[in-house]
Amino acid sequence: MNYKFSDKVSGLKASAIREILKFTSVPGVISFAAGNPAPEAFPTEKIAEISAELLRDDPILALQYSITEGYTPLRDLLKEQLRAKNCFNSDIDDLIITSGAQQANELSCKVLLNEGDTLICESPSFIGSINAFKSYNVNLVGVELEEDGINLEKLEEALRTEKNVRILYLIPNFQNPTGRTMSLAKRKAVYELACRYDFIILEDNPYGDLRFAGEDIPSIKSMDTEGRVIYTGTFSKILSPGFRTGYVSAPAEIIQKIVVCKQVSDVHSNIWAQAVCHRFMTSVDLDEHFAKLRSIYKEKCELMCSYIDSGFSKKISYSKPEGGLFIWCTLPEDCDMPAFCTKAVRDYKIAVVPGSAFCIKESDKTSSFRLNFSTPTNQQISDGMEILASMTREMFD
Image (cartoon, rainbow, N blue to C red; front, side, top):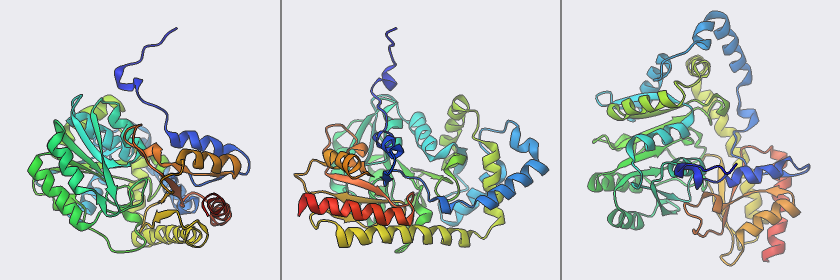
């Protein structure tokens, strides 16, 4: 049978990251291509303890249907935590639990954009959100990402020239895929542009709690006085991605629409996972928990960077992150970057992600690739980076 797919999905393609990950099943391949938390970061014993208590003491809560907005104690806790960071205004905001931050981003797009409306994002950007936005047939416009955040001149040019700009999607902290962080000055400038050109900022913050160097920078949401910022977060990087538990904080009118759309999508997010998240967050020393996570990722990041500094060809540049999970490396401009990534996994058994996987349009050019330091063991980082460093010297020196 000749299947005819809807316009919304006919142009979507499988993630290039997932395609690269197929190579990781080949014996001997060391993968720097994933974006998973470190296995040693999972508090497995505490999660097992909480789960056993929950199923013993309140099994119906964990197994029954729940409300779309999410588990009330968890929502209240998140509101309290966000309020302490000036990221929740009790007078205008509300909060809903979602199935990961990606669903929060997708539903925000669904409730605010019509087909043909413009959504601007950093280029490169997170492929999961890019595909979610594309599924609604929006006019997706990428703006160059600089070391300290989005290029403000090119952003304003897009705001002047593109029609019906409704949303600007940003990952200000340790951005995926580049690991870069937006400066305070640019955050303020972006918010001023939102007020001047009348659009919504969708601020995605999955990595903010994983800062292991430098100083915290206030969120754009904390600057919002006009109800222009939607703020999304997740437990995927601080507790468990398998829980699929995220959240979105936004003006109540927007949350009300997201609730209706979520009811159509999945009724509610996993209530067992929500209850476990709440009990974990209220029964452990969170400062100690986050300190452990940051220590793990700092060690892994510094180990990987040490091989780039000492072993990579000097013709390769990179952005050293202050947190998160990723390092962005840039090859010489005349290098065939996809061929480099293919050669790395095929001939050297080192999997990295081509930067083109994160481009907004197929016609966009990039000579960069992404490394992940959270998933491999320290030994795999040492072994794999030594091999990759040797490859770069052979190719470029």
